[in-house]
Length: 307
Image (tube, rainbow, N blue to C red; front, side, top):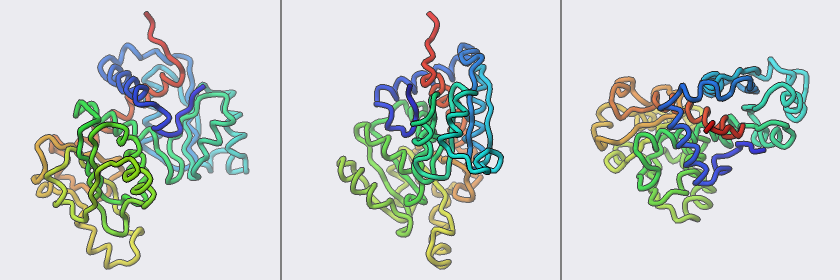
């Protein structure tokens, strides 16, 4: 029985297969409309989530399955002190597969070790968010036709952003990837990512402060929120915050076929005037998230296409 704790749980070949399946689901939704008939997905969300939880629910329902679960720790037996290990053992009696989000790093791994059903990590603390990374990869692959030979700008909170860390880990396995890391000094990529991932694997990267300086060279711009509370003082935040708002003027500096991605929710880091630009694909990204989660559910449940 397989679980999904990290994007690196999949080999590059397995990831290619998953992307191929997700692409086929996008093109032929009717073919998969009953693939999970009589199957149940449990969504165990110990912290609030809108997109991820609803995306999993939509994915399972699109496959003909049903969903049960809880959307906060307060509405589960965790409020009475039940452990994650005990909860997953109980859930295993009710459902065929489980998606779990938890504020503590490693909680999903603990659940998977005690589970009788496949477990998908839907986010654990600041650690991993593998289905967001799979969504990002599908968006790039579907719209660019490749996951190699790309210059990728990562902009905003690179220090605490788990989506950014996860994406770097996943993309370095493809040839000729270069990163442009755009952030204030306070929110630069952590040293362990710089040294143990980028430098160790000889991945070319540059670090810069200004978004405008990076724009002309990018194939992908991955925006994230710069949160006020991450700064040591108000002056630094006020000085830096407008650097990281993507406007029409800044987008005018980019290539015609550059893509703008964002894991959402956005606050003000992408101006709404950018939404109508064909390069802005963050809402398409949400749709791809449903397809890739459908493909992941089918893969973990060992679904086989009927001959």
